[in-house]
Length: 203
Ligand SMILES: [Zn+2]
Image 1 (cartoon, rainbow, N blue to C red):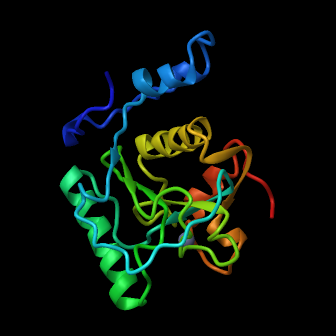
Image 2 (image 1 turned 180 degrees about the horizontal axis):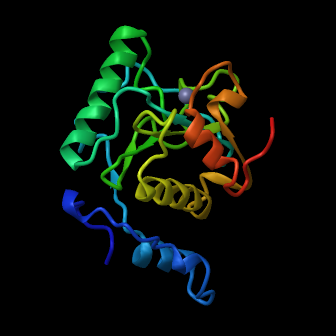
Image 3 (image 1 turned 135 degrees about the vertical axis):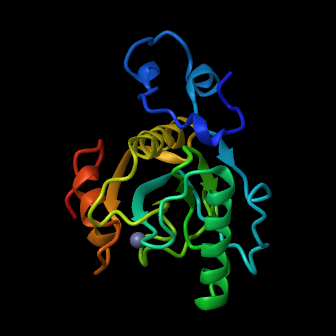
């Protein structure tokens, strides 16, 4: 079973997505149960504040908009990533006056996925796309350096999971934040990387 508590020292350095390239007779439900080596860290687990309001949209979403945080930098343990989520939520709510953390989900350097606003909730990460996208953050500054390889694997796996679980269209379009707004996000290094990912499209 793979949905286990993350141990910081156990960050995988191998790609564990063989289920997507080999066995085709098992169901997607079985894939979800038996091959995921990341865990979804819920809002309760990272001690998120309650949103001041929530607006929903009807999924599955047609877009994934990818971000880096710039700050905070890469977090490498469960506790550090939980703290990063809290600091971003505080900044977005207290500094910007937003209703919640802006992103839909975040990938930590500990190899887990952190629940932000979640699926089918209008975000605050990319104007014009907030009500039709999953805003996926990779926590760290990826202007000059790529994220650790496990973060890239988990991000791609989470996108696949989102399709399989019906929250993202099969024919989704992947954009970096800079493609929909004037910004350096998601950083030069990470942006170059995602242009080679499935479903990335020129804007
Ligand atoms: Zn961004």
